[in-house]
Amino acid sequence: MTSTVELGDVYVCVFPFTSGEGAKARPVLALMDLGLDCLVCRITSVPHRGFLDLQINDWRQAGLEKPSTIRLSRLVTVEKAILKVRIGELSPNDLTRVRTLWNEKFRL
Image (cartoon, rainbow, N blue to C red):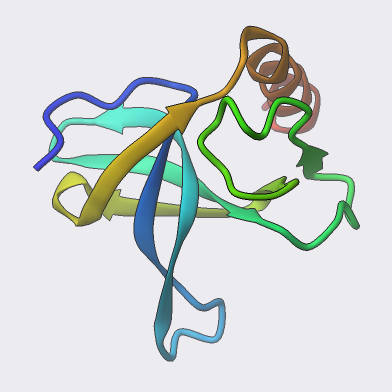
């Protein structure tokens, strides 16, 4: 089990399909440590297509096998126990871009 999750860490996690039926092991971006749980968002190799998508510039540093996109529209809270392995972390530049997009779109 992962004890501490840091903003910008990239893990492999069994991520649920939006239909609620089934799931798939995929990379996720850790956004917030919530004690026993954490808030993550999906990472996909499908190119950028929405206003809450962000192309990862330094995808190799993040531990990804190919160019990838962060989907801030696909958020889920998961138990840390299902975070299989930490594969990398976002570069400082990519992390700054995530923070900027988050602050622009999710300000209450």
